Image 1 (cartoon, rainbow, N blue to C red):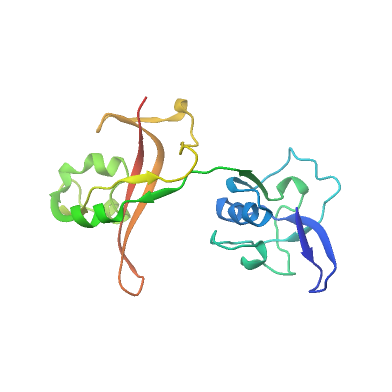
Image 2 (cartoon, rainbow, N blue to C red; image 1 turned 90 degrees about the vertical axis):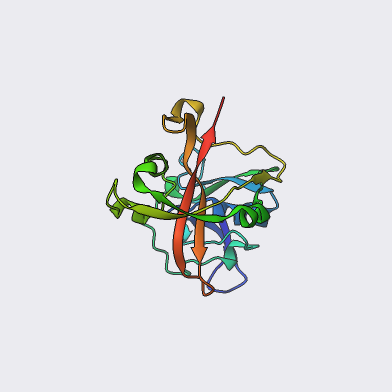
Length: 212
């Protein structure tokens, strides 16, 4: 539910936020605004919560970067509410937590270990299977030719006050024969190379490796 001004006046009312496109970034802003710590989950449906006393959808199209101090600082549709599913069960919701993980990449290690390598495509089947290559690799002439790779070591530290755990349970982890380990999520990190004006010229990914 949302407490917002009516037509720019000082009058306030309760209402619902459209759940379409709602995610963790928006939930982060809500938890911060309410002083309830960190966002654990951003919910696009709240059918199990009793909202019988609040039924009107009064805000839609909310898009936050996650750094805002209030929902009013996020992009939205303003007074023109546009929500395909307007029932109260499709209202946005949040689950907040007093603690959270805080992952930080060891940037200096990336810079110190980075190097260029030309590798034949027939040696990159495992990397392709684990989605570590850029999307343009799908159009390569496998197994002929080669790819030019920017390779580096990385360390990601959890500086937060809670463990970082994959959302998927152990029963849904996927075993990969190539490297002999489980993946608990398809993509753990994105690595993009940008020009000085911010244009992306290359990309890469790293899947999450999990062991028991």
